[in-house]
Image (cartoon, rainbow, N blue to C red; front, side):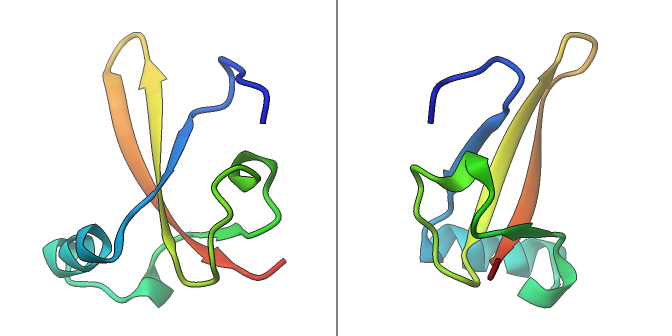
Length: 74
């Protein structure tokens, strides 16, 4: 994917980090917001269904914020 300042950083969490995240928030994968496997931001990551993606967004007023999405088919 061509880098673009309007597209936030997307990272695939490894299994251990994903498990820690689920335990930290005491949730299941089904309770996280979803992102489609075909999303243009995931082209280079090549995630599998059920993987968790960490999205790091930047805002000048608050700095960096992390968001999480679970990959679904589509």
